Length: 438
Image (tube, rainbow, N blue to C red; front, side):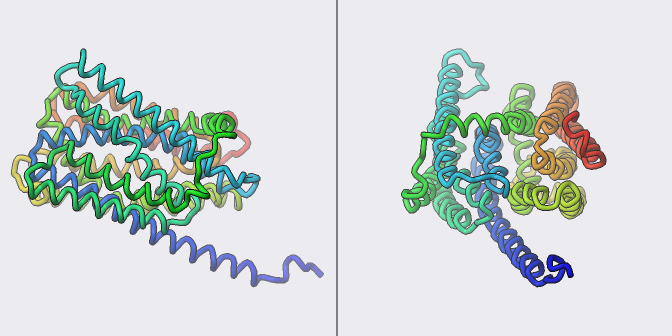
């Protein structure tokens, strides 16, 4: 008699509960991302329609710096937390979230000081295209903007998204109300839009931490140990995130110096339309890291490979259909959304950038698998390859083809990154004993 093999009921019940949890969190993650991306999209469109191409360019440049800071936070704080807190082998410290909160504030304030220094340098000796006022505003608003993302990622890491949805709904309401009032009073520009967003994030994040002040008071006694552990794990992903963000967002700065604010603004308009799929893609991304960690922890490489393959097929098919829609209706979308025929000149860049998004999505699923396998250094090499390819091509292509050349450089860089990640992941999956050599 084999008692272990006889009772199938608990497994079935466990599978049912897990499936319901995934479905519930998947729905909440999608709702949350619709709220976040919808409010950002509405803000960008309002600037593009009511303020013109140059203000849209300024806003996109501000957002590119914010996204770089967010990538650093994700790599060194919340990325490692989402992995470590979902490993059954870890003896989790109940005060670990408090220590992570202290680490977040240390990093956020440090980045704010760095941006402040950059603002001072730009004001004194910077070129005309570099706006010191813009950097100073970002330095003031950065901690509040990053705190909102911390709240969201705490929910994603714990696979408990209710708080993230509530926080982001408050932010969206305050932000969009502020944007509407600014439009009605003729005061909307890139800077007031950032202030309105920061006000919403400060209110929502403040309410979240106040309600949980007894459980989420920052703890510093283990800060050095946690910071060291996060750095040892996250330094590879930090390099990967920074390289990937530079691949996508440094093009705005290259365009600024090569073609000026108008070309930068039209390129930003195209990238905003490419971001229409963000609610679905980022919702999937927010859940993929913890699910990939659990899949590998519970079922090994075979389970992880199965999950990543399914995610790649589903997301790839979705983005492929989106690319076809952009190729057919891209010019109409630009004119409809921004209300000016001047934006239609970017239709070629828009179509090419949509295929760059497809390449990025295909590579992103492999990114999560490699992180779950503790191979973030492979992601770093892959992202650096994509950045180098983009930078080599960007200047000559932009010189020849303007914003269309920028989109071509982006497609080349994203494709190189995706190829390198999948090449490494397939090698590890085929021969796990060679993981350390990759």
